[in-house]
Structures are given as C-alpha cells and as structure tokens.
Length: 277
Image (tube, one colour):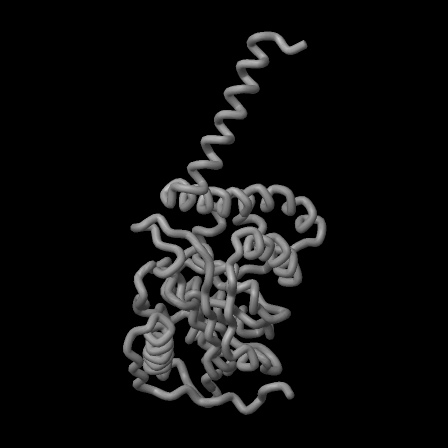
C-alpha cells in the first residue's frame, strides 16, 4: 500500500502534468517556450549521447551525417514542413560554397534537409565554447574562424581552399530575426574566389509567420529557395566586394519575394555550366 506521503507526491505529479498539458494546449506563450526549450534541450542531450561515438570515429566531415540524424527528427516531432525550391542548383560536380541567411537555430533543420554529401560548415570560433555541441562540431570538421583576427582567418581560408569540400556559410555572421538581411561579411567570398569555385545562394523564408518571439508563436512551415550558382572563375580578391554585394542583393530580393514583399533584383546570377546530369 502507498503511504500518505507517497500518494500526495503522485497526486501532485499527476496534477503538474495535467496543468502542463492544458497550458500547452491553450497557451501560446507556454507552448512557444516549451518548444524552444525542448528544441535546445534535444540538441544538448543528443550532443552528449553522440559525442563518444563520434570521438571514436575521429575528426571527419563524414560525421556531419550523424548530426543530420540528430537534427532531422525534430522536423517530424514539431510537424515542420519544409518546401524546397531549386534543389537541382545543388547538383554541381566538385566543391562549392553555399551562403545562407541566418535567422534562428531552426535554420539548421533546413540546412540538414538539403546539405549535400562532403559538406561542412564555416562558423564563428565562439561555437567551440558550446559544451559538448562545440566539440561535436569540431569532430564533424567544422571550420572555425575569428572575424577579429584577419591574418589567422586568411590562413584558415587558404587551407580550406585546398580541401575540395562543399562549405556552408552564414555570411551575416549572427542571427537576424527581421525579414531582411544584415550586411555580409567577406570571408565566404574570399574563400570561393581563392578556390575558384561557384557560390550557391540559399534563402530561407522569414520565420515571422510561424516562429515569432514577440507574439510567442511557434507553428510549422518554411520555404528554402536555392538560387542558381554564381561563377567565381577568373575573379580575383579585388572583385570580392562587388561579388559579395551582388550575392547579397540577389538573396535579399528572394527574401522579400518569399516574405510577400516587393522583389527588386539588381544583378543577375550567372548559371554554372558544370551541373551534373
């Protein structure tokens, strides 16, 4: 038989879960924070679980596939529908640099949905400080750069240019929750020009309609548009500012279009001729 104290604990636990369920069903604020905490908690817990497995494999970009395994179940748990447009623009032979706008950690769901084989990420060095997640990223071959140390960054870019990998970069350098884009940093474009590989712009639609902190909204749905590749063959480092601004303007036009705003494209991307058949 249960003692009085044990019965009281069970009743309190039962009432707690009933209250949590009711709040989840009827409170947008509670549901929003629950989903956010669960999302971040999922990443943290799985990072600790997978760390020993990946550590045994050693540092290799092939470990990114394990990160994909870790992240994509969240898409189904949350019922997030990802509409991909222009997927054939990633069907290029050889290495290239993908640049994408950066809004929230949810971007990684979209990224892992479309990330090609032999791909890794270029991220800011602070990611290394994210406990087990940072170590997991290092073991997965992520490229860490310190935007404040130009000489070190140039050295890393030079080494990266010879790896023949496909690199994913968030060139804004930080998250931006508005339906627009921050000015791009130049590192991704220096890398593409140095390696003479194409740049593939990737645009994720604004989260304002389904993930909005101000109104505590977290529902479903995002669109990813992969734009035509832009050549860098024949360009030099002096062409980087113009190339960077051209890509920014082209992507901003797509952001506005996906968000239902006006579309204004001031430069036209060049189609890459080396697409796989």
